[in-house]
Every structure is written in structure tokens, then in C-alpha cells.
Image (cartoon, rainbow, N blue to C red; front, top):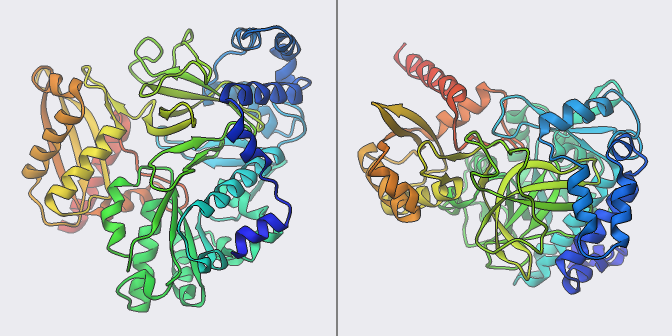
Length: 518
């Protein structure tokens, strides 16, 4: 068991894993917040929001510390914290939101806003991400894996590891920042290796990996589903193979994150020679938030003692406006105040200098005892034109059911709410290379959504008058990503489009049609 053996031999501690196993979530999080506040108390942010006063609250009983924290520090969206604080750190100012100078900023395109976000990545955050990655690797001992897997390589398909120097800092993909600082013991297992990882052209990188694939022994693959699927298809074509196990017989684990895997599962399994384990992670530019800790459970466990303090905003109309923006007086809860089965938007305070920061994801607890969650969508990625409250979770499930009904794969889709006659309609764009009648897709999709979501069912007989479905080749979705300069790495196609994005998408589809006609 080379990699696990290596980890243990190098003295990587599993103390944090045991601590989370045997300590209450509230106690872990209280300690985490205290440590973050102490570390940042002398920063400009810490002085401005009087962290020392909040820290005094820890000496008193009950939740005095949290009341002071909520009172002193406002909730921050990206735009607010960037324009008020992070922008200064980008200019090279020290001790802004976290001690020292921030040397790295991760470019996070997200899927809600068009422009890139600059997320600070501190030394402490890089270490925290590495530690959580180790914890995740150690959970592989719970799986029924052949010893060969642990001696094989790990193929990590991220963005280019090439970082751009901008004044006093470097900017680039988070996977690039992390890969540039891989611990030495890991480099032996890491593929495609530093040279190929640096390649800036996405197509050139995939071609290089495809040509080298036969020289590697890969046991674990890590990456966003759409791009991993494209890569495997390329490898099979290049080496004239039926399935990926012909070249990588020890491949047993696929670690994915960023989007729901369900729409990709069917297409993905056609590329394999036998079943493998799928492990979900929740690694954002803001930090490593959660990972799947148990085999055969479609849930992830929050990491409660490694550089991040969480708060939970009930995802309800009283806390968010129609555009998914958080209201100034939104209710926020601690981990011991949440309920299973309810949806919450996530706030983070972290060792990268994020404070009460709305990351934009919506989660649901499946087990309070184990702090296990599933991601159900984004604060801005839901459709509720007239009270249908359709989440990305509902959409993914419905698309998966339609694909199963029609025995096709639908790896990509997007939906928009549009005015229709005097009321409303949903406009779907469904990506499949299967031969299928859009009318049948529409009927099945509509029927499944009515079962999955009561509010949708009610509105379909009231204000939501129509559902339109366009079926497009899957390539069209990836052509759009290329057109936007967002191929590869951590880029994802938006599942819900608002008006400006929809207009742009429709104009793009027109050029595709015209291109075919000319």
C-alpha cells in the first residue's frame, strides 16, 4: 500500500481525523473560530471589526462569542469583500484580512457571474488543503481496493499549473497553485507530471496526456466529469481501445467534484471495462470544505477542524431576494442549530482571510451526527419565476431519469425562465448525441419534475404555462465554453441562465446554425 504507507511513514498525523471523530461539531467549530480570530486580530480587518472584543466573548458562557461575531462582522458577498479588502491585498498591502502578504490569488470563474473572481490563497490555506487531501486519501483504506491501486499513479486533471505574475502576486487556477506546491513525497505518484501540467493550451495538454497514457500505471483519477470524459474518449481513440481498463488495469477510483456526477454517470460507464468507485469532493477556490468519507454513501462530511468556520443561512425568501442575493438582516445559524433535510446557503470564515463570506452554494444536511451534507445547488442557480422553487438538485435528478427512460446519455443541460404570453415558461437546452424526439424529452422531463417538486407541480397548473425543450449535440455546449475562453480545469457549464447570459447563448447558437448553413 505504497501511498498510504508513505503518508503514515512521513509522519502525516491523523490526529485531526480522530479529533473530528470524537469531538462534537459545535466544540470543533468554536475552537476553529477562536483560532482564526486570534490569528487575524492584528490585521486591518481584525482591528476594524474589533476581533479582540469578539474574543472576549469566548470567556463567557453560552454563545456570547457568536453573538458578538454576528454583531461586529457583516455578511460579505464576493463583490463586497473584494472591493473593501481583498483588492488592497492584491496591491501588495500586508496584513489586510490575514497576517502577511498574499502571494497567490486563485482565478475562479464560477458559473453565476461572467467575470473571473480573485480568491486569496494563503500559505495556511495551501497547507489546510493538503492536510484535507491527505485525510481523504486515508479514507481509501475503508474501500475494498487491490493493493496495486496504492502503488499506481494519481492522474489529476486541473487547469494549467502555469501562474501569471501580476505585480506582487501570482494568479492562476487553484489546481495550479496547489500543484506548484505539492509536497515532495506526493510528486512520485502525481501524473501528468509538472511539465505537461504547465501546458497552457487545453487541447495540447489533452493530446500530450493521451499520447503518454500507455506509459503510466493509473489507479486514481481526479477531475471535473465533463473534461475527464473528454480525456478518456481521446485516449481510447488515440490508442484504438475499447475501454480505459485495457490501458490502466489498476484504475479503481474516480474522485470528482464541482458539479453533480449523475448526468455524466451513464456516458462515463461506457468508457470503463468494469465498475469503479466514485468519490465526491467539495474543493472550492475558497478551501477544501467536505469529502465523501464513507463508501457507497452519496454524501460528504464537512471538515470541521482545518482552517474553516461555517455558518448556515436558511435558504428561504425571508433571507434571499428573487435574484439569490442575501438580505442584510438574514438569519444565520451555527452547526448545532441546523436541521436535517433543510436547505442552507453556506458562509465561510477561513485562514485565507474570508470572513462571513457567502460562497454561493446551497447544501442540505443528511446526518447531523456525522456532519454529512449534499450540495443541492447555488444561491443564484435555481428557478423560481412564480414560486416553482426548482433547485439544481431537482434538475439533475430529472435529467438522469429522462436519460434512463430513453436509454441515452445527457451529460450537459441548461434551463432559463422566460416570459410566455402573459405568464411564464421554462426553456431547456438538453445536450445529447442520442437520437431522440424533443417532444418526448419535454413530456418526460415535465412529468419527472412534477413528481420531484410539489411547488413545480402546482405552478404547472397555474402561472408556469409551458415548457420548451431544444435538443443539441453535446459538442455545442463545449464549443460555447471554448468561445467564452473557459475550457478545461475547473470550468463548468451553467445549469441555470439568467437573461443576459441567455441572450448571449442564443446569439451563439445562431452562429452555430449559420455556420452549418453556409
